[in-house]
Amino acid sequence: MKIFSSDQVREIDRKTIENEGVSTLQLIERVAEGVAVEVVSRLKANSRIAIFAGSGNNGADALMAALMLYEQGYKPEVFLFNIGGDKLSQACADCRDQLLGAFPDADFTEVIKQFNRPHLDANYIVVDGLFGIGLREALTGGFRELTKFISDSGATVISIDVPSGLFADWNPNAVARNMVHATVTLGVQFPHLAFFFAENAPIVGEWKTIDIGLSAKEIRRTQAAFYMIERADIKRLLRPRPAFSSKADFGSALLVSGSYGMMGAAILAARGCLRAGAGKVTVFSPRCGYEAVQSAVPEAMFAACNSDLTIGEIHASHPYSAIAVGPGIGTSEATTSALEKFLTLHDRPVVLDADALNCIARRQTLLHHVPVHSVLTPHAGEFDRIFGQQANSEARLVKAIEVARMHNIIIVLKGHYTAIVRPDGLVYFNSSGTPALATAGSGDVLTGVIASFMAQGYSPEVASLLGVFIHGLAGELAAETEGTYGVTASDIAANIGRALKSLGY
Image 1: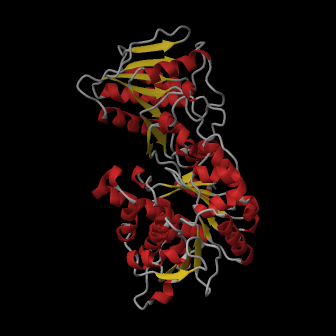
Image 2: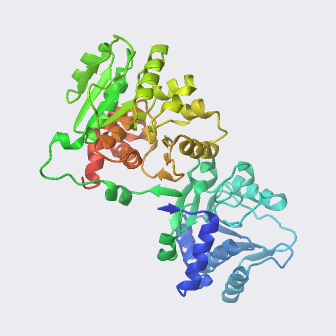
Image 3: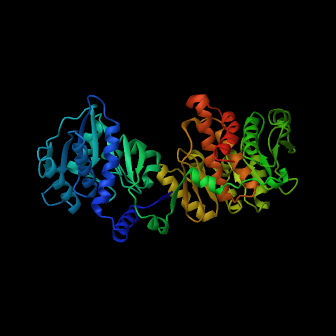
């Protein structure tokens, strides 16, 4: 799914009206229907409804939803903010007139000067239609106080398109306190970029989209810089396996991983790599890891480095299809130097995770030796140690886009919506996953899965998309039996095959 900027959404909206014989009012009715359905689905025996409408088309959506609720026999309290008396958009004015024409006794207040706050409490369902994606400046004065009043009320809040006060795209200087904190946000046709940042989660709440039938032709034609990976995308990218196949057809992966006391990381990466379908997997570790790996993952081969406890050299005995470096290798001076020598001599894309990233953070010059199109898979802390402390996830993504382009690498920025940042500036947010993935060793499994797809001949960009989505899906499947608290990284690895099977492979 494409994630468009607010300007692009408005242009698609305009082209839909111009070229497909759809009126503004019809689009408003489609939004309002989705809002009304959401309101009704949340009603309880003692629920009351309050609707706050602004002066623009977001307010028109809210007023039309109020009309539909009245038509169904509900009696929402409606507040239309028309400060000064002449600020309504044409659509908003039309929707006001329709509501009052059909229900002249509606509980309706048009706020022109002074606003007397109603009573709101936890029994209320509030529809927030004050400000949409057209907002250009942070809220001040009375509207800022109104958003605080709504957020502090304890009511269930349904925001139309975006919570009032939140910009749809970037919010670099946002003050969360000055925005409506929604229980659920109903994005109109598309999710917005702001939905994917951790700091906005308390503002956006749960989010859904309302399909209002915007022009499919214009959606296809409009270029986007941001995407959300969905199940259908992954099914389209995966290749079926021919009947006449051998393990040689699915590549060989080398996992440079493990050290004394950290062999579990190597084992988890190997399990993930094998479950994702690599033809052959070799674990390259210190000699101390031999028995552990051969016992825990008998399907994997073992290649020992020249050290008993830590990795002091990295070499590939033959041309592996893919190489991943990092899980559990530690950050000793010898290991860091071994990584530097390896990166200096190796000219094909590799996967770098965990301690490989920590080695780069300790010796920043290593970054200049990373082969182009390599995949780096940092969590927030690892990213900041390499590229500098970032204020929040939005700033971190901006920085990731910059450095991915600068170094011609792919950055898998791990989080609730893991972002795959490509060197051409495109960003893909992952839609699979669960909080159950937040467990020790989960990232080691992901490293193995991405390396597996690279070994099978997928490009680093595609391998990253496949790996992240299938890893997240495996976590979901594991949580079905083990629960969100009980999932371990071994459970995630064990469900990689089930995840692929659920996709038809």
